[in-house]
Structure formats: C-alpha cells, structure tokens
Image (cartoon, rainbow, N blue to C red; front, side, top):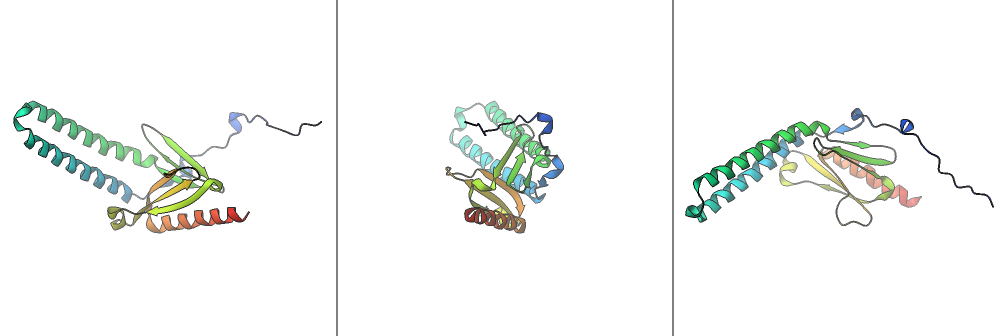
Length: 176
C-alpha cells in the first residue's frame, strides 16, 4: 500500500506578501460621507440629550449636564480624528481567485473571500451615498444570513463593474 498524500512545509519566508500599494483606495468622497453620518448621529444625540434634560430638569445637578456634554464633544472629536487617520488604511483588492478588503488603524482587519465561496453579491446605496454617487458592495457566502464582506465607498460605476465581475465569476464556477 502506497501513501500518495503529501503535505509539505512552507517556510514563512516563502509566503507571498501583500504590499499596501496592491490595495485600491476607496473614493475620497466616502470620508465626507463618514463625516456627514457622524454629524447626523451627533445632532440626534444632542437633541435627545436636550429633550431628556427638559424632562428631568430639576432631578440632575447642572454639572452632570456639563460632564455629559463634554463626553459627547470628546467622543465626536475622537470619531472625526480616527476616521481621518484610518481612512488611508482602507482598501480593496481583486485577485485571480479572491477578493479582499482591509481596514483599521487601532484594530486592523483584513478579510479575503475566495470566489468559489461567494453565493451572491449586492450593491447598496443609501440616500446620502446616492447623492454622492457612492455605493457599497456586500458579498455573501453560504451558510450566513449577513454579509461576509462589505466594501463601502466605491464610485457607483466601479461598484457595478465589481458586482458584474463577481456575478460572472459565480456563474462560471457553477458551470465548472
């Protein structure tokens, strides 16, 4: 009886590398969209806080409002700064057999999905993103009810091209 199974060791120095230049950057308009979302969220939080303050006027000391307001201001500034600093670290990459997305400054993530695992692809546009001609590609794999990979901040035409390319890859894999 012969054993034809082989599982050779690959030394770490022989692994392929992904350079930062290999990734395609997101559209700069997406950073503006992030700022708009942060501003809308902040205004809603501020109005909610003011409404709550009017309901319980005499039950909280004045300094509590200053502490909460200061915390909200610091949180907003932190969100804007982190968004600005982390934006250059976002990008997507389409290779021969997979698609990848990376993001993060404090918490770095790099997700890669082989084409063979993709079930379907969605193109999503919110109200503000539609006005800015931006879209998000959502990629779903088997066995999950939520997306496994989202690539936001794509120009609408580029998002359509990627969706059509991935759909074509799914169709051609089905025929094989």
